[in-house]
Amino acid sequence: MDDRVEGTARDFGGRVQEAVGNMTGDTKTQAQGLYNQASGQAQQAAGQFTDMVKSQPLTAALVALAVGYVLGRLTA
Image (cartoon, rainbow, N blue to C red; front, side):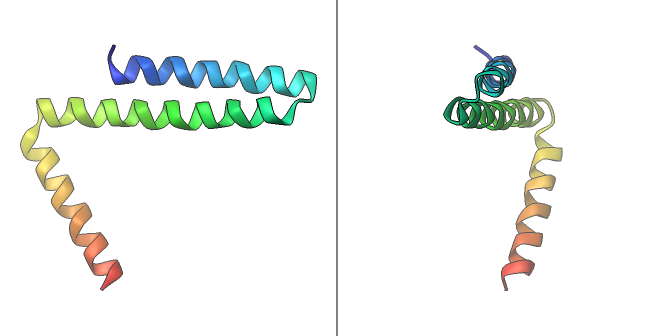
């Protein structure tokens, strides 16, 4: 399955899980829901980046170069 679709499903499931935790007062379920939301959003972003790399390799390479340059300047 596509990373974006899986990420969306995980994010939605996390929202439901958090809501159930809120209704029942179960902090563990709330925390698991928040974790699933965050990991789902990260998976969506990874899928979008992968799609961008496939469709626009030059743009992706320039973005990676710029990010590397900024990180290098920040840590130097």
